Length: 100
Image (cartoon, rainbow, N blue to C red; front, side):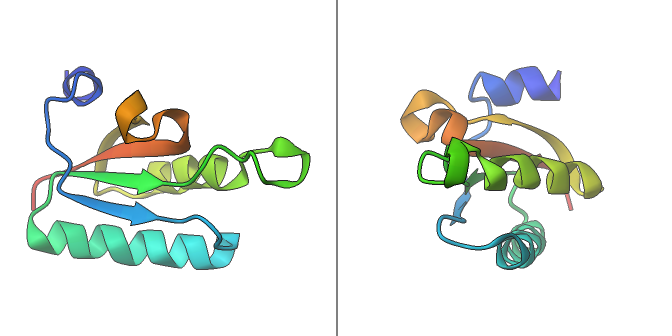
């Protein structure tokens, strides 16, 4: 139910984080800090921009894979999915956070 509503744009994006140009360690720290701050502000839906990996060695979307893995590790994350095409498509992830 929550994932379906998220995919259909049922929650407005309340904040954004762009991870472009960061290595994996920096990206993980930024993501954790961003999500913690978003939860403290009472945000429910945020957008994490990680890119599609087009400029990576081998064209592999390293930050995309890692971002999704990290999101599965956080109990505050209720659901996540690809962003709509106008918000970044496969190069970004919509994240639904549990209410604070």
